[in-house]
Image 1 (spheres, one colour):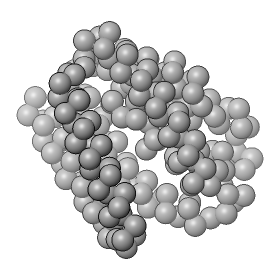
Image 2 (cartoon, rainbow, N blue to C red):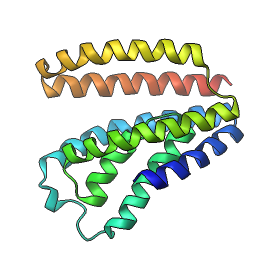
Image 3 (cartoon, rainbow, N blue to C red):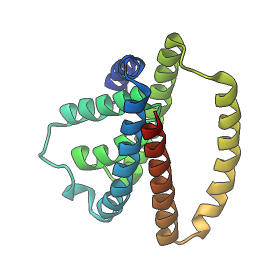
Image 4 (cartoon, rainbow, N blue to C red):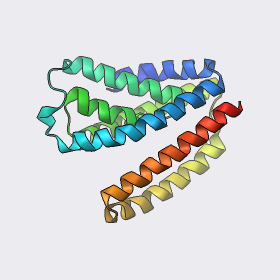
Length: 179
């Protein structure tokens, strides 16, 4: 998963550097909308036995190359970690349980994020001060949410998450059409 992600992350950086801002905004909005749908798919997949998913569709090596490659490209292109792509692909193509997919993707995402950051740094696309400030905000929020999340019903979490994705998608589309 890691090697194809490293290579395709740089390809995503290169493509992002040559696309107009409007195209990147539209691609990001599309990703947000797709993820609203994927939340439902993930829930259905999580209820299945791993043996029911992904067996016999692709050989494991091809599935891993494809999963890592797509996640790396999306990380480089849109500045995402890649986990939103990797987890469902690992479940569908590799037949992994959701827990195993999440655990594996976390390790790959760290490496992919570093590779994407290096590529974007070389292209001059990283705003360090804002990134560091947002990173610290995320660090604090992650600590709070890991304590709060287990206390909330899954239905509420899913509704809140999908609502947030929809609001962000609409705002991103609005930005794209203002260009």
